[in-house]
Structures are given as C-alpha cells and as structure tokens.
Image (tube, rainbow, N blue to C red; front, side, top):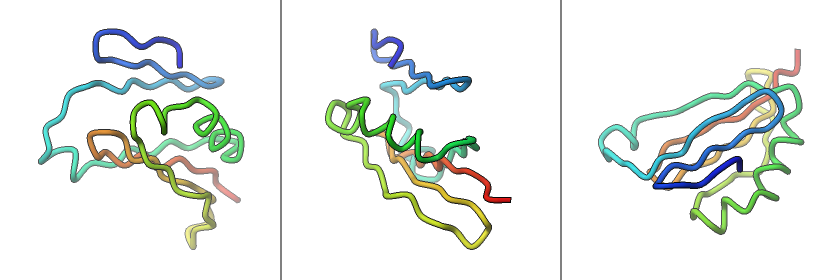
Length: 91
C-alpha cells in the first residue's frame, strides 16, 4: 500500500497501481468487475495476502484457480462489493 488517507487507499505492485475509495453506490458495486492481467499471479496473490488488506479492510480473496479459458486467477472482493479478478494467461 502506497498511502491511506481521507478514505482513499493507493496500492501499487511492480508496474500496476489502483485506488480503493470509501465510496459506494450499491447498484453499481454489485454489478461491477475489474480485471487485471498480470505476469505472475502467484506473486500477486502473495502480495495481497501479505499486505494486510484482508484484515484491515475486510476484503475477501479466493484461492488461485485454473480456468477453462486458459488462465490462472483469483478474485478479490473489495469492501463495496466490486469483484477484482486478477489473472495470468497460460498461453
């Protein structure tokens, strides 16, 4: 985590960054998914677990799974319910 101030948390890992904001429109959050394509899904999964966001922000994280569309990925559900799918192509 790069910073956490005034309801906005800034996260970065290698060449990717994203923000989580303490703002929720339930109708949007319940129907929204972000997809991040990464080179090393194992490193990302470990980074998310080691970052403390699960405990601090109450996010949920799934185990890494092999998908039929030739990707290994995991899901992170942020506090507002947005689904973040973080995956690595196998081809």
